[in-house]
Length: 315
Length: 255
Ligand SMILES: [Zn+2]
Image 1 (cartoon, rainbow over the protein chains, first blue to last red):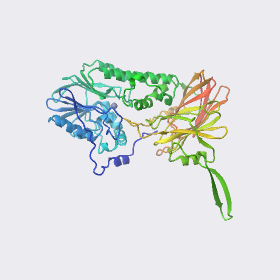
Image 2 (tube, helix red, strand yellow):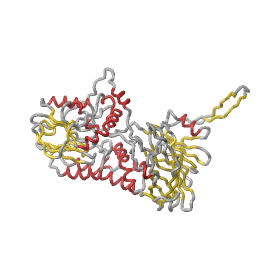
Image 3 (cartoon, chains in turn yellow, blue):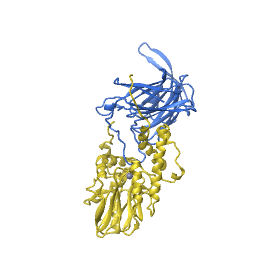
C-alpha cells in the first residue's frame, strides 16, 4: 500500500479560523522543581479536544543570561502560552530550544519562538522531515481547534552528545533511543535535573508507535546510572527517585514477554487484546487504550518470528 | 422483527399485476446507515436474524487503519456452512467469505478500514438462515501519536505469494490452529493508478487431499495478509490458492 496522508485540503479546512473564537487556553502554570528549573506538567490523558493536546511535560531552565526551553508542546497556542508563562518568571531572552524526540505532543509549539535556535538529534530531524505533515494533520484531526494555525518548524541545529554551556548554564546532552530511534535527554548539571523525554513515563501508560523494546530497556539501564536528583519524565509527575525508570522497565518487560508468549502460543491479535493485564499496572492512566495500541504496533513482529517460511511446492 | 411486505408491480402495457412477497430487513442493532444497502446487496430475500452467538472481536479503535485485526466466531452455532464478513461503510464492503468445511466456524484476519464502520459477520447455517453479529469499529483515532502508513514495502515484487505458517495442535478440542501469512500487496484498485491485485482464494486440505476449509478473500484484506483458522483433526495441511492475475501458490505446513 502507499503511504496514507490526510489531504492537504482537509488541513486547510481545519486550520480556518473560527468566528470570534478565542485561542485555546492551556492554563499553563509552571511548577518549580529546582533552582531555575520549571516544568509544565501535562495531563496523563490521550489527545482530545478538551485537553488541546496538552499531554506531555515540557520545561525550561533559567540560565545566567538566557532561558533554555525543553520541548514546545503540541500546538502554536501552547508554545505562545508557554513563552508568556516563561516571561512572567524571567525577563531574559530565550536562548535555545531542545526537542527531545519526533512526537507531535512535544514539538509543535516551536513556531512561538521565531529566531531561536532549535536543537535536536539528527534522527529527530529526519523523523520530523519524513513524518511531520502526517503528524500535524493527525493532531489537527484528534485535537481540533486548539491546533489552529500550527505549522511544523524543523530543528535548526544538531544536538551533540556531551557537555555544553548554554546561556551560562552547564548542560549535558545525552542521546538515547528506544522510545523512538532518537531520544534526547537534557541534564542540568547545576541542579542535577534530568529531562528524559519519553524514555521515562510515570503513572501513565507508555506509548510505542516507534518503539524498539530491547533498545529502550538498554537505554533505561544507562539512565539508571546517571547521577540525577530530579527527573522530569516525558509524561507524568516529576520524580526524585528511580521509580519512573523501574515502572517503565517493568511495563516494557511485561509487554515484551506477554506478546512474545502469546505469539508462541499461536494467538491472533484479537485474542491478545483480551489478555489480562497484571494488577500492578491497573493504576497507570490510559492503560487499556495504550495496551491496545501497543498490540497493534508490536505484535506483528513477534508473530512473524513464529511463522517460518514454507518452501514452495508445485501447485 | 421480521415483517412481510406485499409489493405490487405493474408491468408494461399488458397491465399484468404481480404480487410478490418481499422480506424486509430486520432492524439493525448497530443502527448502521448502510444496513439497508448491505441487506439488499448480500442478503436480499434470504432469512436473516441478529444472533448474539456470532462474535466479532476487534479493537475499539483502528490504530493502524491498514491492518485492523478481527476475529469472528460462530462457535455456539451448529451446521455453519459459510461465514461472510462485511464492513458497512468501507468503499468495498465484502472482506472475506469462509467455508469451514472441516474446521471450527471461527477465523481471524486483518483488513483495511476507510472510516469508522460496523464490522459484521454473517454465518449461514444448513437451513439457509444467516445469523449476524457485529461491532462498531472506530477509525477516528484513539490518541495516535503517529499516523499509520502502508508499508509501501516492495518485498512482494521478489517474494510474491510466499507462504509462512505454523500449526498449533489443541489436544483438548481435537483441532489445530493454523496461522498463515502470505506475501502479497493486496491492492484494492482504489489508489491512484494502481489496479486491483489481490489474493482471491485459499484452499486448505489434508494429506489425503480432502478439503478442510475454503477462503474467498477480497480487496479489503491487509497487505501481506495473516490468517488464523481452527481446523479439525491433526496432521499436515496443504495450502493452495491464487490471486486475480492468475499467480498461484502451494505449500505444505507440517505439524
Ligand atoms: Zn513520545
